Image 1 (cartoon, rainbow, N blue to C red):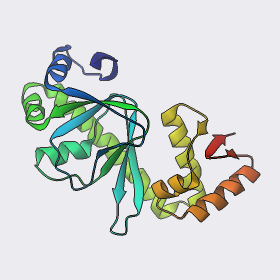
Image 2 (tube, one colour):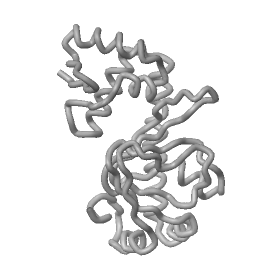
Image 3 (spheres, helix red, strand yellow):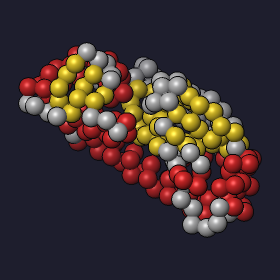
Length: 206
């Protein structure tokens, strides 16, 4: 897939050509770690195919999903950390086999100076991620775990474009920041209500 097919800039294809010239591509397998917390950011990722989940870990090792990065998008946390020569505050993991174009930090600054539409792209990403983070805060603060779990399953199905998720209860609990027994109990309750169908390491939306 070419950059022109996934990134919608308002002007000529010159900036897309610059991205292709400056960047280097790499493919990650499902579940592979792309960026660890506290690692220095040397390049900005642009997803060209697949998707990434971005997680935050607390001092006890518990994780929570912050947002997904889909094709044509990048990680605003990487932008901010890289431009300020700071370490990553999040962990990025390939949700599926994912292709990424990495743009070196020094080239990112050059693009900002030369192309106003590149800065607009960054601001639009920032706005979208801010809204998604507000949704996470709202869910954790105000929604019950059963509602969070069902919404989470629907979101993952939307990302993978499938009605069936191949995932363990342990994995779901890990990403939601709760216990496996809680997830298992709620999934059984959802199955009894006809919302999902459970199988061995898979969950199907009804």
